[in-house]
Length: 392
Image (tube, rainbow, N blue to C red; front, side):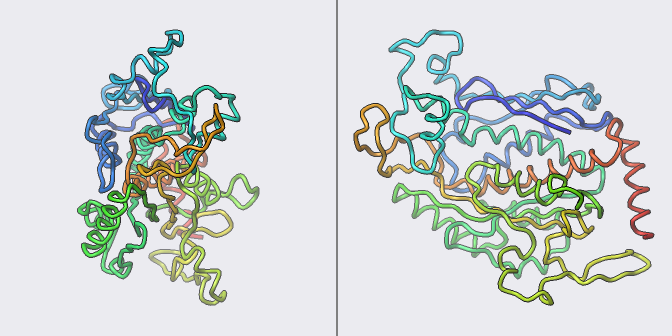
C-alpha cells in the first residue's frame, strides 16, 4: 500500500491516491466523512472550521461501495477557495489584481522562509505556506479512515486522544478503569478537548482561552493506542523495516509534531532495566504474552502482540495574532511576522491525525506481509498466521 496527496490550502481541491487496498472492502463516503468531521471539531480550532465542512468524493477504485483493488482516488473540495480563486488561479498570468495577499514577512517556526530559500520563491512566500499548511492533513485523515476500515475487518482498533494542552494535563489513572478502545473512544470523544476527564477538559479550555486572549498559541501531547495487532509485523533485519521506526517517521511527519516515543518513552531513561522490560509469560489460551507494555508493543522493531502505545509532541502553531519579530524578504527591514488565519491550538485535531497515521502504517505492514489482492483471502491468511503465532 502506498499513497500520495496533492493540493494547496486555498486551492480548489485536496486529492489523495491510494494503491494497494484489497478488493472487497465495504466503504462509503459517509465512513470517511465521519473521520473528517472529527478532524475539524475540537476546542481551539479556528474560523475556517466554521465556514466549510469537509466531505469526500470517491473518484476511482470503488464501485457500489466496494473497493476494486485498483487505485483509489479521494477528493475533498476546499469551499474557502471561492474567496481565493483569482489569487490561486493556475492558468492566469500574474497581475497586480491577482497578486494581492503576498507573504513577505516569514513566520518564525513555519516553513515560510526556508521554503522560500529552497525553491527560490523570493517574490511571495505564499507559494510555500499554501502547501506546507496543515490543511494537507485532511487527506491523510481520509487515507487513515480507509485504513481503519480495513483494520476493523481484521479486528484491529486504533484510537488517539489528548494527554495535555500546555500545562493542563489529564488524569492518566482513568485509563485503568477503561476496558477497551471503544470505551476509551466514547469517553474522549465526549469532551471538546478529546481528553480523559472533565477536570482536565475544563483546565485545557482555560489554557486555550487564555492563549487566545493574548494572541498566542499553545501545543500539547497526543496518545495513540492500537489493539489487536499480531506479533511479528516489521523486522529486525534492516533499519528500514522496523515498524516502530516507520510509525515514528509518520508521526513526526505530521505538521507541528516535534517528538515521538513509545510505551514509557523518555521516562524509561530514568529507570533500571528491571523496571522497564516487559516480562514474558505463556498460557494455553493466549500463547506467549507480556505482563506489561513499557516498550509500547515493540521489540527489535517488531510488534509483540501487545497494545501499540505511541505519543507525539505537538508544538504551538507558528501563526500568532500578536506576531513575533521577523524580517521582510524584499527590503530586509525588521517587521512583525505575517498573520494568516489560524487556530489557537490544533492539538485536538492532531490526535485524530496521529491516529490516522498509525492506522496507515499498521495497514501498510499488514499488506506488506500478506496477500493484499482480496480482503477475504487476506483475512484467511491473517487468521492462520495468528493461530501459528499462538502455537509457537
